[in-house]
Length: 227
Image (cartoon, rainbow, N blue to C red; front, side, top):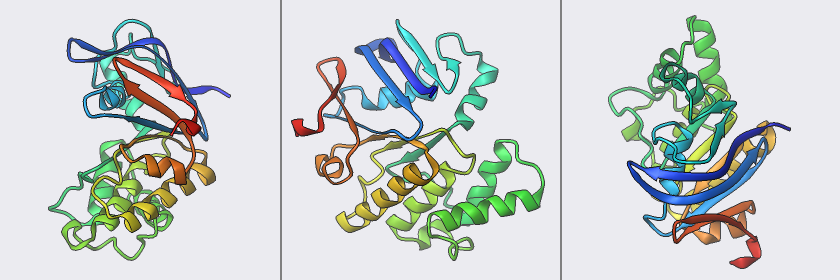
């Protein structure tokens, strides 16, 4: 099985500063991987490197078949279509409905034909249990509902991997559990790899996966039993 993400002896940068040295990480279809560590240890810099927002340092960086060290600017949008991103603060467009939020993304990523667009929106809303909310404005939804819409947005283009940056950070415990159940079902049923940043160690105790911990300018895979 081909790797979706493969970093070998990779130095992760934040601007000109190297924040993690010699990262070795390989993620394949169906993997559920956690990134944990204190604030400022480089977790988000890894995410931004994967999406080609941060320039890679020394080492080997491959994401969805692209070499990030040599990727051309015109190919970055194609790379990003293979990646879904879910943020802690949802980042929905507050001046338009749920349906219009999703339609905006599809049109921006090259979808043509209103019928195909409508069918895809209906499908992802059903996948996340929000099929009755298409007409709603985001501010009329709860935090958990907004995050479900954000996940629907992330899976619009059938990504190979979802990057989830503290997706439960703004949610209460019950709602956070619902979001974790949803992410796990997408992972299991669709084979979509998930790389999730979290501070909450109880999450990966309840929803097991591989765990990488960032500390002291390193990021290494550890055994779940360490926690």
